[in-house]
View 1 (cartoon, rainbow, N blue to C red):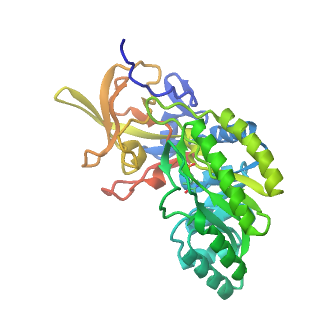
View 2 (view 1 turned 180 degrees about the vertical axis):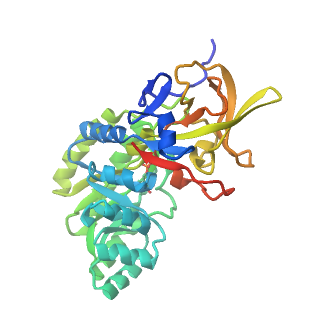
View 3 (view 1 turned 135 degrees about the horizontal axis):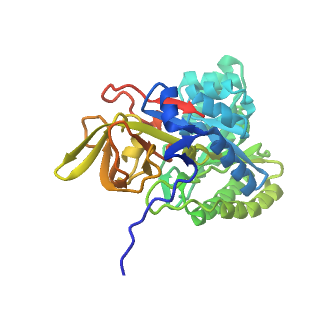
Length: 411
Ligand SMILES: *Cc1c(COP(=O)(O)O)cnc(C)c1O
């Protein structure tokens, strides 16, 4: 018996017309001109809207959706999402500015992240958003700033849980962590919050992200609610909200399958009922970044050279690692795997050759696809990297090798 090599799932979200991929109904070739040339990121607003509609349909109605905007902070994208979701989670004062510019009420914005500077805390404090406390030191600094500025800080406690989210691409809770306050220390923190007269809002329990296995999320949700009930007893006042994190992943690599959203929603239904019984009117929030935007975006680069070295074909493009670190395999991946890649103006041509797609940087790390079966591509053709709507441009080392930055467009 032969073992089949795992393949990428088909990227069906963007149609092709006459062999040219369309984003938001516009052919890539046209978009390239519209944005002033290649390389560029293009995001499809209808796909983002569809994804939110899908989440609304599959998750219990009582679950509020927040956009974790570090996934894609392009102002046009954040603005579009602001009209679809219930709140925005920011991770810096810079992100906070963009979130406020969308008109999202400060009461629906929260600010997480270790190492918030005094200046950032003051900015957050005066706008009235919720600040997720990540340490005792931060809490004391915030309280002093609150007195100085004459504002009572609205705070939530970000909890570093006493368990881990299994099978996550990125673990952000359990064991020693820079994020959040160890669960066992939360009762002490709640006591100090009362002494300092901070306006306590609730808990933020984020266990990890990029999870494709529904069973892992069931377990994480079971443990998250369990922990929340234990901590809520220590709070002595009803929680305004409980943020149960997110974690929904998207399929990037060969063999990856989409998460079973319906199953996650089904499992959450029971929890929502129990939570209403045990916590009363507490708002339940899920925060998601990549799941909302990741599949709605592509990165597009143009082939500027084609060469064969000792029998192997290289397609050298004008885009690469400096624009799209994640696709190059250098954004936290342990083993390099290819993102789904296509030749965007030859979508009607079957794979004809095995080629490696690189960028222009003088480093072997600058690779967009390694030994992939692709239609034959020539100078001028457009290489498309799918699943690029999240952790793309702003998660990349734009300054590395001093090439120009990519364009960016929401269609
Ligand atoms: C990064 C982050 C997210 C978003 O993770 P995704 O995998 O993009 O959904 C959510 N919450 C917190 C606290 C984060 O730091």
